[in-house]
Image 1 (cartoon, each protein chain N blue to C red):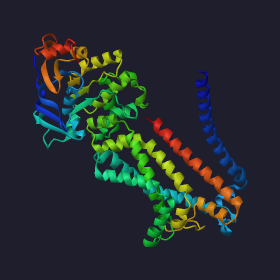
Image 2: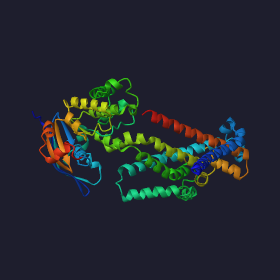
Image 3: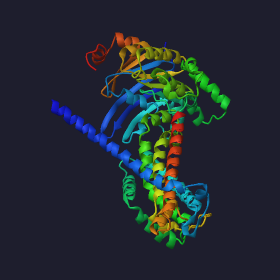
Image 4: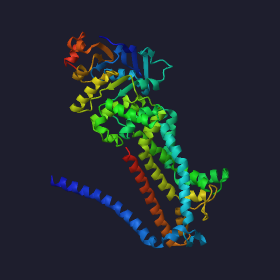
Length: 253
Length: 277
C-alpha cells in the first residue's frame, strides 16, 4: 500500500565550501508516513533533513545543486518564498529549545508571526496544538508560567506543539529523543505514531531500534550518499547492500 | 605534605584579604561621605535652587540638569548602540571588512579619555554647530562617550542568546527581523541593561567634558538649548573654588543615593524581565 508522494528529492548535491556533504540524493517521501534517516555521525542525514526546509542556507558558504519537489512545487526555485515553505515544513530539533517566554506564548509565537491576532482564535490554536502534542493535560492549568520550568520531555512536546500551531504538512525531526530519558522517549514515539495520521514525518535518528519502531520507510546514509532506501521492515530484515547490513548489525558506526 | 597544606591556606587567606579590602574601601568612602554630608541633606537642599553661586540654597537645578543630560544622552546612544550591535552580530557577514572596522572603532572609542570627547564636543557642537553651552551639546557629547560601552555590551548580550532560538524561530517561518525583534532582543535585554547602567554611571560622574559642552549655569534648564550644571560639576566647583565644603559633601551624598536608586531600579526591571520567562 503506497501513499501519494509528498516530497521528491532529485539529484541533490550539497557543498560546504570545498567539501561535498551530499552526493546525488534521490528520495521519495510518502505522505502520512514516517520516514527515518539513519547512519553514523557526519554521514549527511541531518544535512539532508535541512535540505527539506532550506535551513542549510543559514550557513555561509553552502551551495546546493539539484531540486526538491513538494506537491510538485520546486522548493529551490527562485520564486519560492522560504517563509511559506517553512510554514508548511515544521522542524523539531535535537535539543528542545523553548523560547524564554510562557508556555502559551511559545505555542502562539508561530500563529502570531503569521498574522493571527484574535485572542480567541489564538486560545483555540494553543489548546488544539497542546492537545495534539499530548501536553495539554499536564500544562493546561499553568499556561502562563515559564516554559523553561517544564521537564526535558515536556519541553520537547511543547516544541512539537509550537510546530503544530503553524499547521504544517510536513514535520522534520532531527534526533528529537537524543536528549530525553527513556520514558519521555517512549511518549514521544507514541506521539509520532499519532501524528502521522495527519502529517508527513521525516525523522533523523542514531537509534536503530527507534527507526525500526516508529518508521515506515528508512534511508541509510553513509559518507554523504544514500546507500539504501526501502520499507523499514524490508531494510532491517533484508538489507540489499552489504554496508547497510554491516551498519544495522552493529559492525561499525 | 604539610607545607602544601600551609601554602594552600596562605593563598586562600591572601585572596580573602583582597576581597576584604574591596569591601573596606567601599565602606570607608561611602561612610566618610555620609558622615560629612548627611547632616546637610534635607528636603530644602533637594528642592531649592542654589543661591549665591551655591554658597546658600539647595541643588535642585543641578539634580534636574543631571537627569536631563543623562536622559538625552541615553535617548541618543541606546538606540544607536543597540542597532549597531544588531548589525554587527546579526547582519554583517563573518569576516566582513566593514564589520571589522566598526568593531575596531568601537574598541578604540571606548579607550579615549573623556576630556578628549569634551574638547571635541566644545569645538564641534558648541562652536561649529553653534549650539552653545547647552543640554543638547552636552547630551550629544555624552552620547558619543557612552556609545562604545552600549554597543559592546549589547553585542555581548546578543551573542549570548542561544543559537537554537534563531534556528527554531526561522524554522517556524519567522523572518529574520521577526526573529531578532521578538526573540533575540527580548532575550538580550538583561545584558543590554547592564551596559545602560554602566553608561548612566559614567554620565552622572562626568565633569570636565560637561563643563566644556553644557556649561556650568546654575539656572533651571528648561529647553534643550539651555545650559546646565550637573551635580558632579556642582560638587567640583563647590570644592575647587572653596565655596562650601558642607554643600559639596551634601551633593556627594545625593549623587551616591541617585546612583544607588538607578542601580536598584535597573536590577528590579531586570529581575522582572527574567521572571516573566
